[in-house]
Length: 277
Image (cartoon, rainbow, N blue to C red):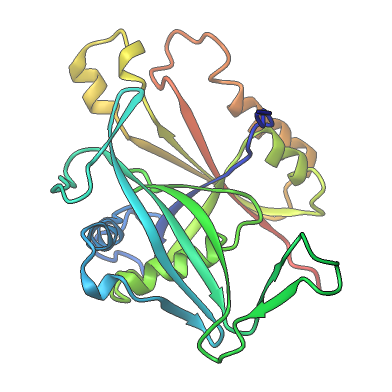
């Protein structure tokens, strides 16, 4: 048996709520709110197979999405323990959700080919009814504590559709959902080809590996899941210099800086490219 040893690639995002209203309750001075408990509770309902969570959600005229399978994992250090189906989930414990979300497009028919027949005879089409369509599954990993979402690239349900789905399953109460891509070296290579950059928003979330932490537990608890934010703006930023600066931040983890308490850094960068006229 031949094993596929090609490493899989994933895109990392950070989601949060944002408003332009000054002084809005529950939002910080930048207008951001990182409380995603409504999504957490909606996913719990699907985990418990409540009837109102089992229907497909209509995103637009021909596109419907729904969760086919879902698992919950409690996080402890570098380990994740699966929660048995039918068990009570304690949302107060650090956890993440892994689920398959299915996108159905009623404008598309599904084609099945019988490989033992001639190429012009082994095709069968399905989904000709108005309520039927081809389906494509996407695996999603979501941590409601820090808002990190992991998706395979070029997936059936991208980050925009996922945010729209989260909006609907939260009872349309979770308004102003935004996403920021979590930058790595691959993303930086793509950024270098931008024409101009007008704004740069950086947010750092520390994900601390408890097993490797050598300090006091009080310090550990005080910095666990803390966030820092930085907004650079003021016209066109030099693309090459911006990429160099971000790469320097990414190298913080690789360097042995004794005073750096954040053991592992996730860099959330939202970059605004000047729109072309």
